[in-house]
Length: 471
Image 1: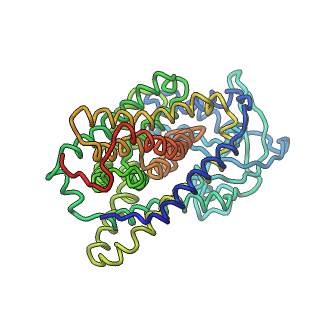
Image 2 (image 1 turned 90 degrees about the vertical axis):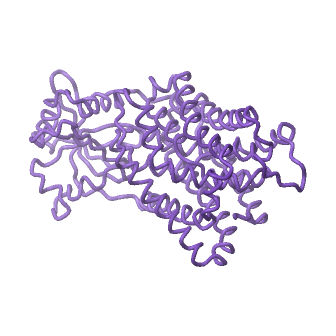
Image 3 (image 1 turned 180 degrees about the vertical axis):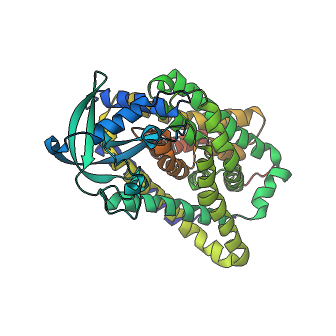
């Protein structure tokens, strides 16, 4: 069973609080939102790409017009941004109608990229500026281009062509590698704390476990849907809405175990809930995303990619960790406190780094404003309060209720951020809203968790020094 090292954990929580303060002091003030012209263009083109009946003639015209320009008259410019690829779900044989390539500045300005007609120019073996083009999608790159405007059917479109091969920013590459490795090794560390006894609780003492899973995968996504619609994110900012569903459809993580330890709750119950929900996430996370986002015209959930991500970065390392514990139990038990503290600190650092690297997005205070932060706080705080209420309603004791409450409101934000990072381009998430929503939830949930721990003292008193195991 997991035993927390108090010194390491104290430092972890202190670091969390300091990190939260630094982050929020770093966020920009009330900057006026940029015009929505570029997003409107993106929505127009993604609407064509994701529709089974979209008029692909515009894709063909954009590609042909871009290639036919006199680029000698273009304006030289360099900027940092992303390549976005919109592929038609209709899969037409004609390459010119199948896809369109877009360059997006971090500030949101959009260009239609002129791409050579010969697909061989985009292969890794090509010596053109476009070599390996599809592989850089989503990465933060430095682009050197010439740009100009062209008229198509009475509408002006910004066009661009490469004047040098794009280069990926080193910090962006390191960040992506780190977040994936961090999630993998945190899950290995979690696996090293588990035995089959932790899973057996669902059969020997099922009431708390079953309620916890219903709250995690049943109530929380439903709450996210209700709040998302009530605050208008469903209609106005659909990818923030998807981010809310994503973070609430993920399992618990090491944070809920740490908070349960500090809350003097049932740590064994917390670990069992985390481990069981982690295994179940391979089914419920993609299922809930697909269910709650069905019918949204701009949204197409890549279910297969979500399943693959959870399998490779969650289930496999969890099994590896359990195998290590089974073979080298003494090593696993000694390493557990260190890995737990390291996992929390690494998660905080990566969340802060991810948010700070997207500070340009926070300039849009209509999108990421007071309503956004209030919504995220309510989502995690209400999750814990409803977890408390439902647990007491069915007669679960205070000791276990503390664990169930925290497991309900605290999620594996590292998993949500990684999934968001991997699927944002295939989904057309123009502003990386899913990633930002998951990252901000990952920070704000610590604050909500600390508040909940203080609330438990008067609402859920437990006998000091006693461990209550009964249902």
